[in-house]
Amino acid sequence: MTSATPLHPQTSQMARPTRQDVEDFLIEEAALLDEQEWDRWNDLFTDDGLYWVPATLGQEDPYTHVSIMLEDPLLRKVRIKRFSAPDAYSLQPFPRSVHLISNVRIEDYDEDSGLLKCRAKFIMLEYQRKTQTYGGTVRHDLRWDGDTFKIQQKRVDLINADGVLDCINLYF
Amino acid sequence: MLVTNEQLDGLVRADEVHRSVYVDPAIFDLEMKRIFEGTWIFVGHDSQVAKPGDFITTMIGRQSVIMTRSKGGQVHVLYNRCAHKGAELTSEREGNTKTFRCGYHGWVFGNDGTCMHIPAEPGYDDTGFGPDSCKRNLQSVAKVDIYRGFVFASLSEDVPPLTEWLGGAATSIDNMVDRSPEGELECVKGVLRYRHDSNWKFFVENLNDLLHAVVAHNSSSFTARRVAKQEVGEDVVIPAIEILAPFTSGYSFFDQMGVMTYPNGHSFSGTGKSIHAAYSDIPDYQNAMEAAYGEERTKEIFSTNRHNTVYYPSLTIKGAIQAIRVVRPISVNETVIETYHLRLKGAPEQLLKRTILYSNLINSSAMLVGPDDAEQYRRMQKGLMTQANDWVSMHRYLGREEEDKDGGTQAIGSSDIVFRNQFKEWLRLMTKGSDASLEDAA
Ligand code: FES
Ligand SMILES: [Fe+2]
View (cartoon, helix red, strand yellow):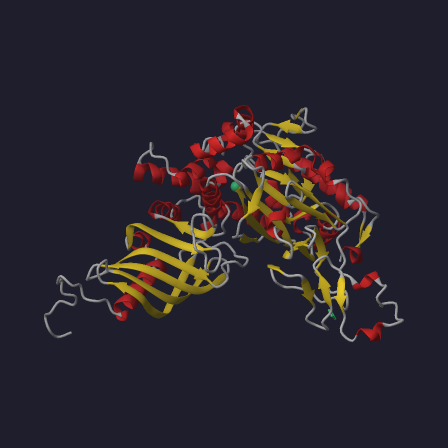
């Protein structure tokens, strides 16, 4: 980038986000999770942003059908607070994760609202006493403000959502 | 190797149990044979096979079974084993079909188990496996019975009638069903399947272990209280916090909850106080209930707020929450817990939403309360591998129980009576037959 032109000029029409923008954001998000920067990760969400891991593939509703994880901002704060609770025995030793994110596709972008829907594939390894492997499709509903994104909803469809699951400690 | 009844007898004392019941694979094998394949086991809810042709597959102990509903509306529990050479007939979890076709040599069976077609059939003429042989049909399990929608089966003929076996503990199922204005439950889609690295008995013991919550769930429950107070203040009712907060209610609260035990190993907690009693009202629901049952009876139904009821060894229910958890032992140190959710027919959708919210928070392998428990079962599994003390305590409030009128025995909430009662049934079932060789168990 050689010119002094801002990357995303704030005109009445916001610059359309590119796949590169989306991918960069998802990579940053994954990095915050792996680096255990939970508060900074949670700040990526909108004030009512939802984190959702359905228990059935194609699950339509998070409220009348059970989920593996369903967290609004308050419940995320509870989980994040619990990460540092000295008596959270199931987190001893504290688990680690590595996220790989790929195959990013923008599915829809609404210029007026700045709402962007994208889909990516992910693999996450979580290690505590043994290494667990998780993979699937992650769908983000992102709010674009011309410069950056906020997460309105993050939906994680594990390929084995309806299978037998071990304890999952960290965020996908 | 022979496991004699005398040896088994020696594993259970009035106040202690030998650690091998949790860690010895030979004991586990015998438990599968004599407990899970020897008593009433919950198979499913009849709404899971609502229409003729519907089926689900599940396990009774180590044995694969199919629950079907046939044309006439009857519920069958059949071994999932082809009558020909034994292949598992279906690997689907659920479906709807008139017939099952074996994928190996093509034998076809009706959903009531009747053999309907055998390719190249004349080859069996005059062999004893011809049209007259009942061995050509799928085999039904020894006993099937349904109590208010809950389908139980036994692989053994030698069991009391289901209602007699349930005894006074049946009132917990009654209370769950009565909470529907139409007196009926419907199992909804969506099941949690949670693997525990521990023996199945830790789970069924823990459900009415009222001594653990204050410590084991502090990191979840107390953190939830603290964060909610900080973020939204104490006066705002947040449904998730309403569910999480009572887990750290203090020892005297849990003692006042009380426990009740019944013959055959059953028990429930919540004779007095309940962690489910203080939830916010849902006015439309109250109205629907009063319209159906009248004011007096509705009050009576809502005054029962039991915590967990355990139908030993495999079914555990939460009447006030309409969720059930089913125990599937895999090996001596591996157990899968399945959570199913029931809709109260005729009740507002908000009730189902509460059931789901509760289960998300408590029963999921990825949320808060479930992993608190699972971690302690794992630690017991590991701790009891040590030879520090061969005996595991069940002393608490020994001899301090009180007789109750409904054929049950009541005690203070944190009493170990629940475990003493479960091991009484464990020993009864384990020593029912003659001495067992290990070949017998396998
Ligand atoms: S094993 Fe089923 S048809 Fe042969
Ligand atoms: Fe617990």
